[in-house]
Amino acid sequence: MKKYDPGVTPWRVAEQDFPEGAALEKILQFLLRYAILAPSGHNTQPWKFSVERRTIAVYADLSRQLPVVDPDNREMYISIGCALANLFIAAEHFHLGYKLEYFPEGDEPVAVTEFSTEEPGEPEFDDKLFASITLRHTNRNEYETRTINERSLQKLKESADEDGFCLVLIKERQIKSEVAELIARGDVIQMNNRAFRMELASWMRHNWTKSGDGIPGYAFSIPTALSFLSPFIIRSFNMGKSQSEKDRRLADQAPVLGVLGSVQDNKLSWVKTGILLEKIALTATHFGIQYAFLNPPIEVPELRQELKSLLNMTEHPQILFRLGYAKPGRHTPRRAVQEIV
Ligand SMILES: Cc1cc2nc3c(=O)[nH]c(=O)nc-3n(C[C@H](O)[C@H](O)[C@H](O)COP(=O)(O)O)c2cc1C
Image (tube, rainbow, N blue to C red; front, side, top):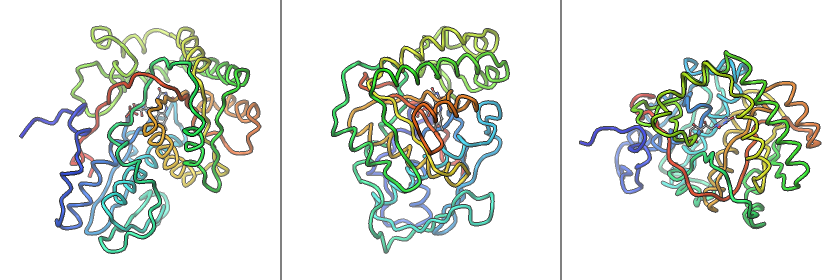
């Protein structure tokens, strides 16, 4: 058997490998191979699963918190929501029914889902999203300035059309540049904080990493030799100014910026935000649209309020990203399912 390569092997999960006719528990283990391909803050993959007979329980892995950038675990629960979306999309694709309960016993588990091979019911997700699970990735390159066609934008809007949530898509130059200004200010505030840099550095990996988590330098276009030094550089030097100028330019140039917001601002709404976020990311992937996050104005509390006012939102901004066309990037590593069950 080939050695597990965390940057490659997990992304090679193939539909033909579905264990047809196997015990449900085995099938559920297979579905988790799709769940773990979800995005997560700093690629922490802050999830744990328990599989028992017909049930998957999802837990937050509190050893993977990001206390500086995400002190309330907001992004941690959003990340778990992304993994749940993949799980359900895969379940529907393979014609499994499921009944979901969020936080059935208080804080943990985050969700318990009972699966069945008998009653698939009405699908919740567009089956086209399934093929995007293994293609999706965060693309931090510069995007082309050409506009995104209206049909794709409409589909993105529809993918987040859910009670209690909103997706704001910003195309106007002036508003984009005001949001870009908030992003730049957020970068400076975060990078000024040594604890923020230490935390980020601890999740940075070099380009030949065999670690199953964290962000390899190549995801930031860092060349291999430099990628070995990048944790040291991030820890030791405050590059807030250059980072903020770069992000301002990327946000300004992107044809569209998106903000996903929710009426509630609690654990349950964060998990549900994650489900919608993954739907948006997979829909974008389906239409050949790249995306990358620019979250500092949401992560820095005083800027979150400014962003909300700037966009006249009544909802709480949860995730800020840019959308556009670019050459696809590379996948980041994932831990094997056996490590997290
Ligand atoms: C809730 C959440 C917040 C994120 N915030 C940022 C961010 O502020 N900046 C960034 O560059 N990437 C951000 N990411 C992207 C992750 O770093 C990325 O998902 C992870 O490294 C895995 O890579 P992949 O998305 O290409 O699979 C975020 C992802 C999630 C789910």
